[in-house]
Length: 404
Image (cartoon, rainbow, N blue to C red; front, side, top):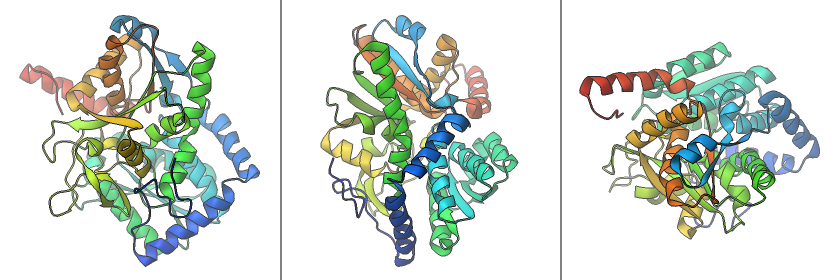
């Protein structure tokens, strides 16, 4: 893969398009990360907490009943939902927080959409005795009240962001502004594989434990590589964590499932790879949803954690070079998959992960029984239970298909 170690560019994507103040802060983090990346002591400490605190390795579960029901390929679920805090987000939060502590920082800030990254960040800050401030759009706070409470219970201060669409992209803006002003004593713990260098690189590295484990587990279980990897993509941290370790394995097809929302009209989805163009947002170049004047479009998704107007630079590179495909999944398809997985396997997945499950439901019946699909089940659905109940009640009232 073509990546510039100094600028963090994946082909034409990535880089740093930021103010001088923010560049100073970013370069400070990038320099320290390059030092610590190969530090055996740091890697041993991280491995200890991933094993003893997070509970890794997460299982690779053969969903036999679902596979038999669909009558095609064998579906395996990478169970990131079983991690401490309930999602893949803890992998990256732990890695960056341990690094920040070694840097001597006492204050951690982060952005969050669905709240899972916020909960993971608040968790590691409690573990490591660090001050924690989480920026969250007020629209997302209303959708994810339980996660707001969990963050506050863990000792974090949750700051509501009322700007713009009051969702994830606005929380990122607020966090970047705070970081630029306070980087001397503050560390910005970014949660997705987006943003200016070095964040996409760091997040990819810390999340690659998913793909490294999955490769070893599928070879042990079946003696062969999977035919397909499926993962939901908003910014893209869980997907890049699964995809990157398989990058050189050309026989493995990688498909990211995007939030198709209520259709292709502007403002009705957050499918940046499907409907976006190469541009610069939040200090990096990627595929993003912008209007004719270059302004960032409003987005929508059933899943708050996917409600972001761009995809990470490494995903953008995979898309541009054809190494991976990215397809939209509608709110109704994701919600139906949420129900099917619960009914068939007793697993309540996050709405985000349900986008990947939805495509597995479509793809598996078209394949032979000796083919293999690995689905990254990036999070559990406890946080979405109240929203799911409201959708089901609404569905009964209108007598139609539940929609967000």
